[in-house]
Image (cartoon, rainbow, N blue to C red; front, side, top):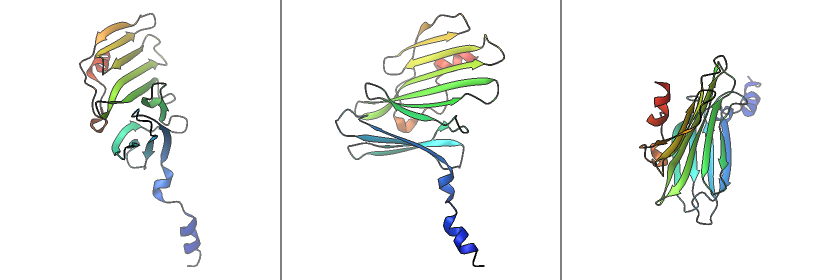
Length: 179
């Protein structure tokens, strides 16, 4: 019975076995440092996004990106203009590889999903390759499919959603490439 207590003291809590990554920067452009974190608590295989903005606002959005195994975890970066990028990818499982980037920007007093990028390729069918890059603020985008295809401009009707209304599905402009 005595061995149970020391074991319980050294055993890590369940939440500690998940994944997390953090980054800081001035995402709102107010000169005050903001913080972002992706955390996987082991519930769903997806990470939650936590934003702590310098003005005191805290946003928590659940299940925003897939958390792969070691080497495939999502990441956070800050662009030169201060936007926050949330990147997820599958670079090792199965034949269909992909990378997805959500770009978050502070616009009109709120954090919004301002951009969406999706790139993919099939490791067995070299012609099944493409990209879709959408600027949800400007309403402009570019898509390309196939080995030799040049990018072509498209109109984007998907709006720049508030980050709380996270895009759980691929925007229709990109999804149309798979029909």
